[in-house]
Image 1 (cartoon, rainbow over the protein chains, first blue to last red):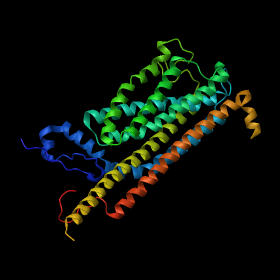
Image 2: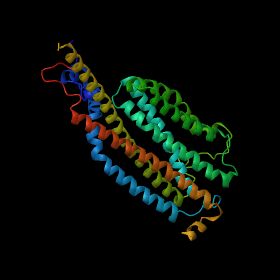
Image 3: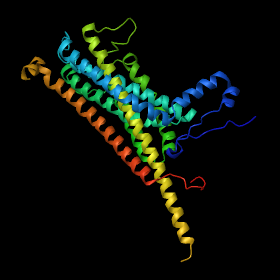
Image 4: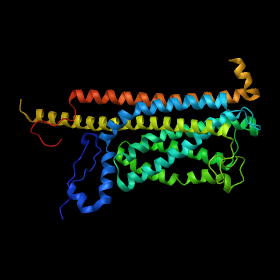
Length: 289
Length: 62
């Protein structure tokens, strides 16, 4: 059986991707064909081209949704009968909490992509997602504290939900630190992927903490069996803002991935340039004067 | 403006502080990503202009 031919795209970036030949596809059948198409779509060069075209649109739509969402949250949504005007904090707190968990879940999927499939974009996606997820976790903690003081009488309590979100934030910081400590991207990618997967155990703990323990934090009120308990006049602004923040976060993620791909190209080109200069110096040294 | 703040009731400070924190954190994040993107683009352009990574004509892989 002949070996599948591979073509290494984007070699200077140090990110090699195997583009399969028709012979390989015939041998492996339809499933392999579909997988190969997916891999082709996600190669870094195509990603750079695709993201350059998509990024302005994504940014524009997210900006429009955020403007609409903030208008609905501030001028249309009524004050809550119990929380009063502090309900306005929920419109940023809740999407931030969702996004902090969503980005961690995305990182866990990317970690699998790094460890199992060694996908060339997986660790790029993972590295780009960490600071964004950390910022949304921080937004969630800070806005939660500002809501907690007038409503609970305290900025912080060592409640299961609050503590598990704080742990999530600390895991994000650990992941960012690990990326910075290890210089070689593929080695760092594997180490971070393992840490990310270990840390993923915290995500269901956050989600179900309000059910498993007796917490001060209220249980789920939007996505729950039996439907949302929030009135439509407050639910719609929340959902519009959640969608706006999600698209905004994805815009940032795409831009950060582009920066990371370019950083790796810069690193590889710098190494290649240094090697070329070394060779030239060695050749000059071997020529007798 | 002061009328709007007054309409937020006794907890206006907490509400405005929350939105202020959101603005500062997300603006900082956006700025850092945009600056990083621009810096990498500049560095890449400079390297490509110097011909870094180009193989020598007739030479093997670097």
